[in-house]
Structures are given as C-alpha cells and as structure tokens.
Image (cartoon, rainbow, N blue to C red):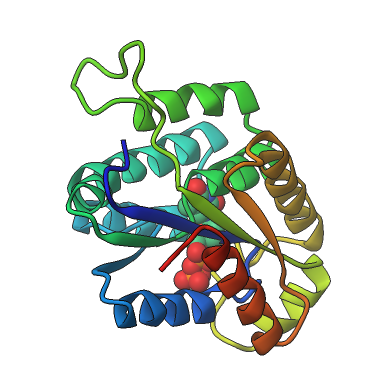
Length: 218
Ligand code: TYD
C-alpha cells in the first residue's frame, strides 16, 4: 500500500529527543535527491491540527481520546500520507499509531484489542465501506523507537516550555507508555528498531543513521 515511497515513524516518551533527529534525517534524504515530507501526529493536516489542539489541551475520557486520535490519523492518511507515498516521497512522521497503543492503550488503560480494531478500520482500507479482505494495513516501513528511562526524559523536558496535557503526567504514566512501546516492538519486530536514547546527540544520531542505512536508504 505504501507504493514507491518510504514511510518512517518516530516514537518515544515525551522528552526522548526525537525532533533533532527527524530534522537531520530529512536533510540526509533531501541531499540524496529525495522529496521529503516532514509531518506529525496528532496533526499534519488543517483538520488534524485542530484535533491536536483539543487532544493536547482538554481532559477527556480514554475512548473519546482514542477515537479523536484515530480520526486525526485518518484525515492525515487521506490528505497527506497516502498521496505522498503514492508520489514516491519520503514521509517522516513524528509519532503514528504506536503512540495510541502506548499512550491511550498502555498508559490510559484503553483495551488493546479494541485499539487494534480501530487501527484496522482506519489504516486498513481507503474506501468508504472500510477495509475489505486482502487490504494490507498501512504501517510505517520503519519505526524508530527512542527509548530511555522516564526520569532522564523528564530532566530533558524541565524548563524547556509549558508542558501540555500529556507532559504533565507523573513518572508512572511514562513507565506505562514505555511498556506500551516495548509491547508494540515485540508485536511488530520487522519494522521496529529500538534506539538507545540515553546517549549524546551524536551517539543517538549514529544509531539512527545505521538503522536507516541497514534498510538501503536513502
Ligand atoms: P509530541 O509528539 O511530544 O509533540 P511536541 O514535541 O510538540 O510536544 O506531542 C504529542 C503528544 O500527544 C504526546 O504527549 C503524545 C500524545 N499522543 C498520544 O497520546 N496518542 C497518539 O496517538 C499520538 C500520536 C500522540
């Protein structure tokens, strides 16, 4: 389903430091002559960015939160990600569906199997009737999971800016988010790469580059 493009997602708890590396990787692909789209979730389209403002600013129940995350994701896929991949572009996405499993699933306690149901509905087919048999689930070709202990991530976030709804959560919440990512990594070993994010920016960048080169990119 991803056509000729390349779809890479970046995951990790808040403060894992993925933004720096997304920008650097975008430059590497661009220098190699690839057309790069840098985007994020929730967000990436005008509608999904409006949903992002609600999701990051307002308290809501876990079902509402999960549904809005997936609604934003569907618009993002329809309006930006799928057309870009069909056109052969490189899509670098700051968070994707794994974040919903880690945050709404593992940390908020929303049922994992129900999230998989929503995932199939939203990423399983483009038609208005929803996914049909044989439709492949649209997933990233590669997911770089920036992993580090929540205490270290919290230190990095300290004083950087006003924390949003998720960033205000206690350490136990991020332990659960981290466990959620670990579960997704176990369930999707072919596309997940765990990046040790405890090192210096240079060390982490080396690991990022190595994982991308191992796939034959850029
Ligand atoms: P984040 O990606 O950290 O952006 P910024 O660096 O601008 O803060 O913020 C997105 C927040 O949304 C983050 O706390 C994780 C949360 N989130 C979910 O809870 N579920 C999801 O499915 C996604 C995509 C994000």
